[in-house]
Image (cartoon, rainbow over all chains, first blue to last red; front, side, top):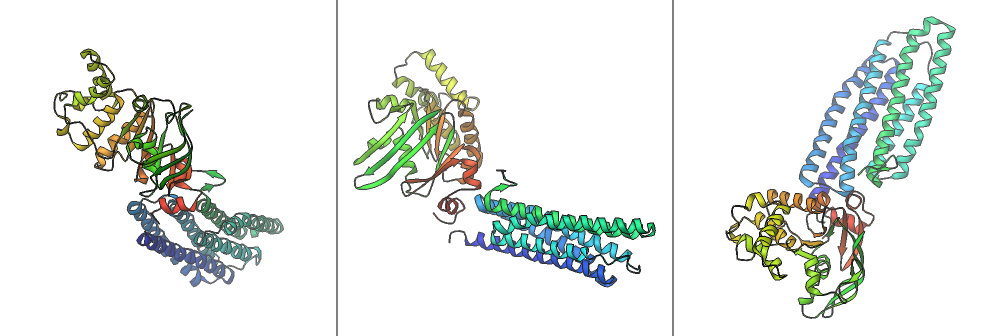
Length: 219
Length: 249
């Protein structure tokens, strides 16, 4: 194998990316569990996890830039490395949203919830799967899996619309529900955005495999 | 418009078949890069475009190479072919004479003897090769005293002096430092406005920087021929991918 050192460095970068992916999946899972159980300690731990995610972003970024500097990658190497550079921006944002959700959880820690919003844990489960599948698709260069993630965004969008409708009904029933309903709407929106970021990741994975981003050749 | 139309070109050195039926269209006023591992046939094909291979004993060519529709292995005069299709080699090879005489050599061979005409050709050619400012005060000095990069640009100028239509370049920067390489690449890009250029290079980055189209050769065949940006971003053939990413070859 002519470029074993390069392949080794590429593999190291990818394993850091997988680790970053695992961290954001855990952050989303912790954020939703803390929210549903009103567990302030767990929410704080989800907030703290964001620093590690930010560190991982810097680490993967540095590895990618060094690979570009040292190896001057072309073809699939260029696509994979540039895709990783784009992915980590969306992954870092996902980490931010998990943190945002946990900050609202802290505000609501002592409140009596107006409603146990079933759709919120559903949104969390769906987005965790989207993020996990998008990163798996990158590692396995699995185009079908990446496209499934892109399609799956409709499910999360529908859950958001349902949540929004339910929260509106609660406000109509009693305007005093308004403040908490707004908090839950924010949380739902954060999950909806996490879904969008997973779609962005999946779109770059398709580029890594085919050279086309959103059906357009960009090189 | 197609400048060179290569049709099912087979080339043999004695019993050894170096080219196995090449079909390739070289566009006018474009830069076409030939890449591939050593011994893949890219330099052989380059040399067959102005019949330099005729000089190799036991060399035999089957198939057609059309220059503006005319078969160069047919009735076309070889001297005229080589005037129209100039060549620049890997190692700068200035003649051991003055800068001026290097440039005037070709035009003199083609019968131009008047001094004012030769003066004009030398000046225009050196300007076209973007080396006039550096050499205008050294025209009577020996070309051998120039730096490697200057010698190579002088060789390009020498090739231009007979007003060719095509320039063939066989790894023209492989013996040069990055600054000289950069100057030659700029020059090649500038020359594209007037000439069709075919360049053999082992430097993938160079092919991506300057060429419009790239052909990847392997074992005497063209594996893939495409727009350079396509070939280097998403090649269609796994053998191309493996070669350009350095995984074999």
